[in-house]
Amino acid sequence: MRIAVPTETDSNENRVAATPETVKKFTALGATVAVQAGAGEGSGIRDADYEAAGAVIAPDAAAALAGADVVLK
Image (cartoon, rainbow, N blue to C red):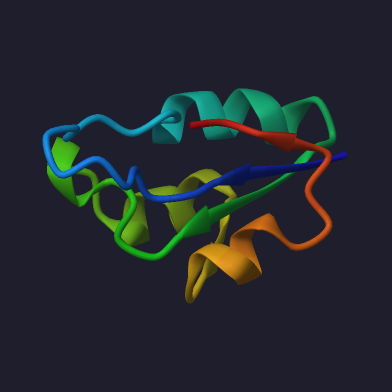
């Protein structure tokens, strides 16, 4: 299963739909998690934190969403 986490598009929304902790849980269950580059910036979460948790960093929304079975937004 592939889970996508794109950047929020609402300019007033700083939250992100997944944290590194939830990424760890999803990957432990066998899922692949793709997080759009910069998706966590508004929440103070770096791309490197997602990578360390097991996520793949996608360069843009289209790449994050490609082949996704589930989208967290």
